[in-house]
Amino acid sequence: MLYLDFLSNPDKKEFESVDQSLLSNPGPTTYNSKEIEKTFMKLSSEIYKQKVEPTTQCMKRLGNMYKASLYGGLASFIDSEGSKDELAGKRIGMFSYRSGLAPSFFGIEVKGSI
Image (tube, rainbow, N blue to C red):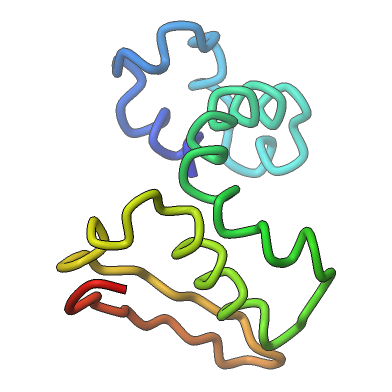
């Protein structure tokens, strides 16, 4: 996704270190490009640590929980927040591929203290 952000706004400050020649790659050639993968994995590592890693603690301890992993991620996220009161009024996006053709996306709005 960060690569797509780069394509739409390459002059953005966060992309200063990215080789501008990556803009000239035709779409299909980017699918298996190790250079693009390494570049944007490195750029997105801090974002991943901040936004995704806190939701993985439950699965790291228990292993793959299949269907329960969505709610294990939610529990991990809630546990990772310092003050549970800070979540009041916030929205949490939940996405699950499930097992088939019908993925689910829904939002949770935190109404009060947890």
